[in-house]
Length: 529
Image (cartoon, rainbow, N blue to C red):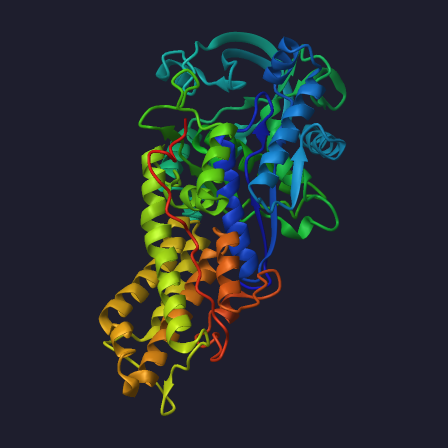
């Protein structure tokens, strides 16, 4: 794992409106993964950005008396601002209206035109105007001629378009799915896209009458490249430079399930088409596509009219009341990474804060640092008794800690963020159980047990230290404060998790201060208005 390059992307987000929890969620889980992998010694490139050439952007801008570029600039700035506010560590922010992107898209489409994989043809069929997606006749009937995403009626269209020869890559795609079981995750999404690929037809990739908003088809000024094909190319345009090409292919594309078709079928087929052309041999397929589910709110689909929409104001409320680290923790552990939607409920948010952070992480750190401060004047005791490590009640701490870190690393590699974080919490809960069993506060009353007391508290604080290393990617501010209280100088940008996680990193004699990481918060006063 160490020193390898790895590339992770969010989808790029439409700029027809301001950011909300859906955008923040996907970017946050990518950020946790990117931080973890950097801490493991990986050379990570983390990309996010905005998708700007949609017809909806032109319409929204016109309603406000703005040009499409002005509206895109305004909302792209809002995305960048909230991502900075929430501590995202993305290495680049791509905008599809940027010249660097436009030039590369033109280059790629020109190459596909010359190869014959893009051709001019006639389209007659159904169109989802809201999603800007063509729907095959077989699917239109299945959907009762309504958008599967918005429920709005499909539009019947007859027009001349440039097409991508998707049908030519059906068998190659299905073969790739067969050989790479984790190509699309979770499994339910994999099965869904395989079923749809079997009926894949050539797809239109251009439109006419788009004005000057978008990227022209090379050699044909009447046709504008459709927003979704333009957008898909962003993952490639950003790293198609001499300095960045080494990051390709992406380890993970993270998306929501509503854009699975574009990313799980069309995008890999386009990459296959490019790769066979001279100069593009390096353009292999991405390693994995993860299509997570949606957030609902208080048991219902999010809606501004229902007042349950988690918008920027709501996000700011949770961050201000509970801390940014708790916000990140909740998204990473309670979010819809699986095949089912996740419910964002205020009472549940509060419950997770109390159960996991106040009563588990915070309470354990406070107990351990308080006892070292009280019984050893804040100096970390030694673990050894007559030169040997103390083992009490079957608690083999070096083994337990190593297992927890190993579990976290394997889980994070598979994008199982709850599993990785859960391994750290399980180690902390084990410390609580160890304290309850050994009762150091009773040993402290017997001077002949002082060395045993010291060994027990050393094992407690060392296990907490190691657990905090796994928690750092999701809670960087709070773990940083804990490291300061433990007298540690840890720099995840320069040190590796695997080295720091070796048992015995807490040096005897190191000064420790009692710390309270997560204050109790009253309910329902903490609930959003």
